[in-house]
Amino acid sequence: MNPQSGPELRDIHLPAAPGWWPPAPGWWLLALVVLVAIAFVLRAWWRYERRRRWRSRVRAELRRIAEGHAREPDPQQLAIDLSNLLRRASRLLAPQAAALHGEAWLDFLDAQLPTQDAHAGPFRRGAGRALLDAPYRRADDPAATAVDAGALIALVRTWLDHALRAKAAHA
Image (cartoon, rainbow, N blue to C red; front, side):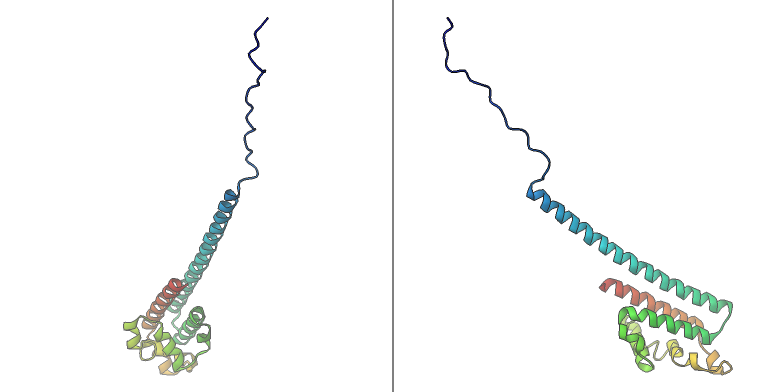
């Protein structure tokens, strides 16, 4: 006879390994945070790209205007085109600015320039003054042809560069 050594014992059974689904609540929270972060990054990138493309189109429009004036010099048309371009661009900075006219319009343009340029008043007292009356002069008027096209284009380029850069920094 075999001596009895006690009750017959079975080996220890471990529970089944936990499955990967459903994840623990911490993983759900991490996934939510990652999705929100991705959404913010995509939105910021989309806004940046939209602003970059808009600034690129504005600069291309200025180039087109300058090249058109170089091919066919028409100071009156140049003043009209540059004024329209500035009005469209100013709507980005202050929507009500596009409705300004006369000296108030020139003051607004001067106010957007860097401090040292704004005191000189290049729009109110300089080449930018042509934006006020050159578009409305008769083509045979000598004052209509007295527009300093190079200075006006350079001034508008400076204004656009500064204003668009300032808007990008604030947005």
